Image (cartoon, rainbow, N blue to C red; front, side):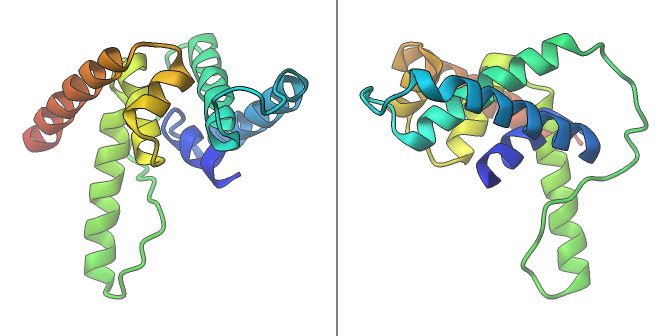
Amino acid sequence: MPLLRRLAAGYARQTGDQEDLVQEMVIALWKALPRWRGQTALSQKAFVARVGQYTALQWLRAREPSHADESVLETLPCMQARPDAQAEAGQRQAALLSAVRELPDGQRECVLLVLEGFDHGQIADILGVAINTVDQRLSRARARLRNQLEGS
């Protein structure tokens, strides 16, 4: 479930939308489970990530673009003790998450899966693309994220 929550945070801005997306992912996993019997090269975590990614993309494409109030900062839990350090780390995380959400779908998928600890070969299997495609998407995503984060 933490994997699905992190994936949902990469696609949805509002906490309520994230929860809705996690529920959609769980339903999709439930429906997809009979088709996966552990006989493929995909591990259980990779299978969950694949179904979660596809569900998130379908959810994202089905929604109309909304221009909700973006002044609300979403932060991920931070383990640092000092409040100023927590605030700074929270702002960096929010900026990164916001920048990741702005990436094209293919790049966003790859970045979120890298952040989940998958290697390039596993990501290629999960997404059903060539490993060179994953390398290319990640290279472009890194450059774009660097430009966005340095420019802000």
